[in-house]
Length: 280
Ligand code: HPA
Image (tube, rainbow, N blue to C red; front, side, top):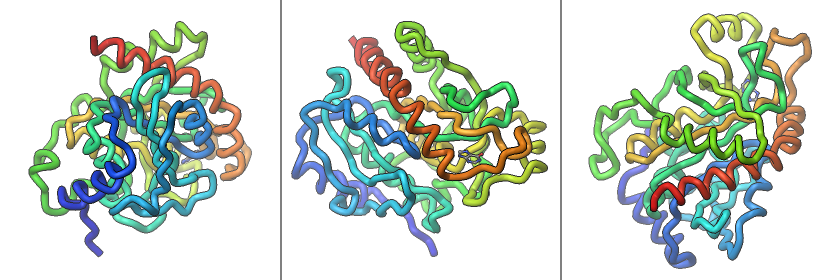
C-alpha cells in the first residue's frame, strides 16, 4: 500500500476548509491524547469535523476527537487539530501527517505539537510538561518516503534543528511568566501500539532518549519539510516500562492528560501570544 499525500491533495483539503473559514492561522496546534480541552479556549471558532475535510483520515483512538478548530487563541488566529493520526492505526505516515500539511497550506508558519509520553529518564515524573529538544525517529518508516512533491518541500530536508531554539526561548519565557515548571528532553518515537518492554526502555535510555511516545516525530519531519517552525510539548503520563513496577494503561495516559491539560492550556496560550508578539 502506497498512500502519498500530494500537493493536489493539499489543495483539495485547503479548499474544503476555505469554504467555511476565511482566516489565516498564524499557528497550528496538534492536541494529543486527553488534551482536546485546549480547544475550549478558542474564541469565535469554526469547528470542522475531520470527516468533512477532503483528504483527511478519521481518528479511531479514544481520547482523540477528530475536529479542526479554527479561531482566536489568546487573540492569535490559530488552527487546532483536535485529534491526530498514528502509524499504529495502520495508515501510512504520509497520510497520518496530512493535517500538518493542511495547516501549512492554510498559511500557518508555526506548528506546536503536544503529546502524551512515557518518561524514560527516571527523573522525569508523571504529570510534568517537557519541551522536546530533539527526537529519534525509531518508527522504522519516514513520512517523506515515496516520490517527492517539490511543491511541498525538498527531497532531502535538513533536520539539524527540528525543534526551534528560538521558539524554545519563548516557551521558557511563557513558562516562567505563568509559573509552570518546564522540563527538557529528547523524544524517541516508536511505532506502538504495544507499550515498550523494560529491555527496550533500557535500550532507549542508552541511546540518549528521555521520553518515549508514538507520535510527534513524523509530524515534526513533515512540518520541517514544508518549512514550518516547530515546537513540541510532551505531557508525561507515566514512567516508561521498567522505570516503575506499574503496568502502563491507556486509561492512565488519558487521565494524566486530563490532569495536565489545564496547565498545558495556560502555557500554550501564553506561548502562542508570545509567538505573535515576536512577529512585530
Ligand atoms: N510509551 C509509549 N508511548 C506512550 C507512553 C509510553 O510509556 N506513554 C504515553 N505514550
